[in-house]
Amino acid sequence: MKKALFVAAAFGLAGSAMAELASVDRSNWTILTSNDVQITAESMDSPPTQGGGTDIYSSINAGTSGYLAFPAASGTLGVDDYTHAAHGGPVAGSATLQEFGFVGGAGTPGTPTTFGGTTGGSAGTMFVTWFNSAGTATVTGFGVALPQAGNFIWTITLGGAFTIPDSGIVRLFTYQQGQFFLSSPDAVTIGSNSTTFGGASTGAFVHNFRHAAVPEPTTVALVALGALALIPRRR
Picture 1 (spheres, helix red, strand yellow):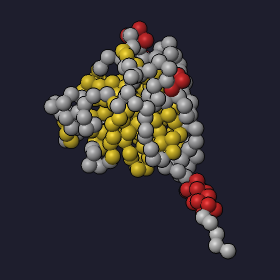
Picture 2 (tube, helix red, strand yellow; picture 1 turned 120 degrees about the horizontal axis):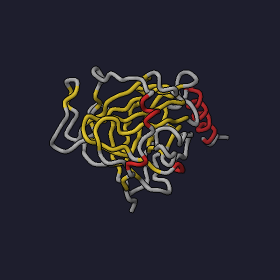
Picture 3 (spheres, helix red, strand yellow; picture 1 turned 90 degrees about the horizontal axis):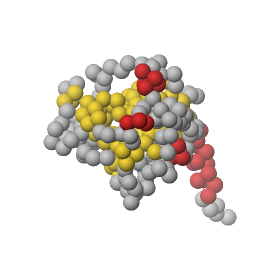
Picture 4 (cartoon, one colour; picture 1 turned 90 degrees about the vertical axis):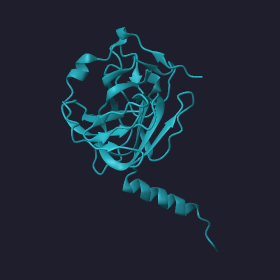
């Protein structure tokens, strides 16, 4: 069984990196619910089994340190940088996001948070924001009403509704109590991540999240051609 441990306050988030990020206005953000998108939760005791799209960044596995977390808090839960292994967007330097995954959770059952006229559900709302690699501009983001409280390996299937930078910064935020889990740097299995940014001031940890992209049209065409080549020909 994997153990979810708490990280001591001495390993606090890199404050200088967080302070440099652009401000975010969430007042008009849409809150996605399970009526809008597919939201799944897996136990942290099992290996992630997310599917769909093509993984272009992943640090969602537990790594050799297992899953670790700061105590539950409100506000910014964590921020980390990433660089994709490949892009899947309409232009170079971008990716069309099929799925976003992260390890953590938000909220308390029976105490929904109302924000922007939308009730975030009994488990609370998690806000995900992407910034450019310098942290000086907000690129995109959304709120998601998690259908249950507690910490899980979450997968939000977005179906290509958001375009994110190939190299950028992701941040999780909640108005309720929540957590965004971390692990050792060897949790990064696809793409790359600077361990000196965001994960911890010592560079000892990275946050656990995942990007899966909608394949580029050229990639889809190549896969289709490959499938045709496997079809037996009649003589």
